[in-house]
Image 1: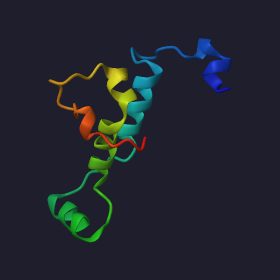
Image 2: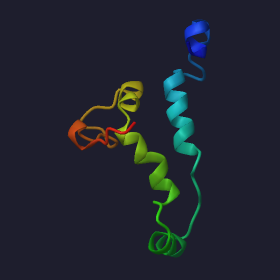
Image 3: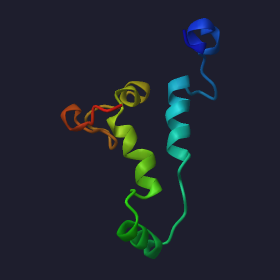
Length: 89
């Protein structure tokens, strides 16, 4: 059993955010960075990974729980149709 299953009273909001919202907000902030346009172009040309700004938000568009946590719907900017979401997560 997981931590929240054993201690459901810990599954409470904090600073007006639910636990799921806090999790996804923290994820989106974790790999952020400041970079010049020139640095990003060099990174894209020479690194096999997407820039951090894309890795932090684009991934969340493929997680159904992200849509549930924030009530994201078809007209919202972060919306990605279900048939275009990767099923790996």
